[in-house]
Image (cartoon, rainbow, N blue to C red; front, side, top):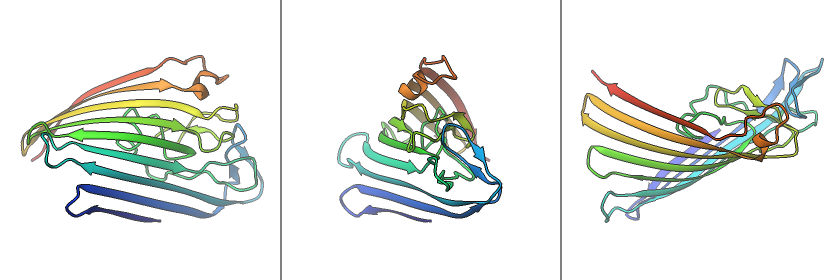
Length: 214
């Protein structure tokens, strides 16, 4: 894999690009997709990739120094073929990447996100993000942030849902920070029409945390 990040000097533009490719064989013979995981007696070749690209612009000559960014994330999933194409998120830290509510992992997914942040004062920070989640491969499953299957795939739908995140942080001093967050997840057709669940309602999640540094 490779990662590139930087800023364009003097114009307020920043960018990040990340790509990873996985290959080898799956000794367990596990093949994801086709609605539910399957096993075979032979080893299965792995061929999976993931990418994440983001570009942002900061308005440095205005109050609050707002930044607007657009991000696209993608991770491959498996179809019914003979290869394991489901990208393995390995050791995920997805909390701030694909929605703070932690429903979505970097596996068999596409995410288009718009992010806005601002600093009303030197010690304050505000953040707003909107995510649009879908399956990369309809036959594969929907995987949550820890890599476990949340719902099986192969139902003819790929629109997982949308999420809005709102965060506020205040730094009292170098030893104490307080942060509050509110997230709302709107279920898409993949969740609403899934045979294994009747839970098609939206989800709300909130938190309040303090960080003390010594």
